[in-house]
Image 1 (cartoon, rainbow, N blue to C red):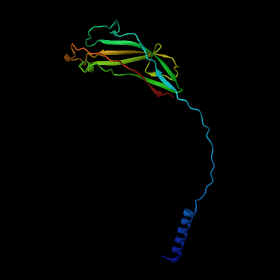
Image 2 (image 1 turned 90 degrees about the horizontal axis):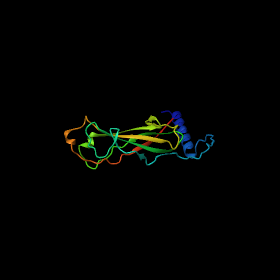
Image 3 (image 1 turned 60 degrees about the horizontal axis):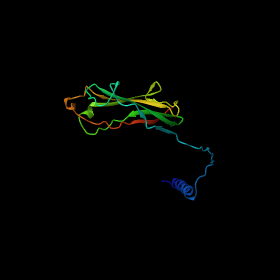
Image 4 (image 1 turned 180 degrees about the vertical axis):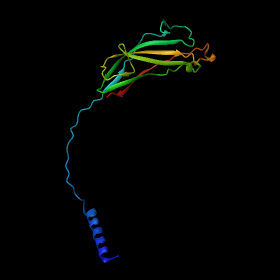
Length: 172
């Protein structure tokens, strides 16, 4: 290698060491401020609910009648919504109940619910609905005839509580 190339490489290396070790290369800079804001979160809650009592096939009050495949029990419950939030929406769901014992009925009883605000059926609580609105949930437990087997005859079981859930989502 020629001495002139060696000298140039040595000068470049020395300059790089000088810049890196002796300080940093300064650039101009400045700062700006983004103003803060007070933040408060919203809320979503359902009241404990008031229910009208179980009905057999939507008609007579259910007391001690024996269910057969194809029968359904229904109950209408009302809940008051406590809601606050600009983009608040919620979806509704019903829990799968537990039974007092594991038996053939647990796979043959199907739980479903339909919801409405006033006379309007809903699946989502819209952001335009105000606080203290009443949600009506019609819960139905159907003895599924297609799933029924001979093993589900003469079985006694207790239907435990069913839970209606409102789960918050974001509305645009």
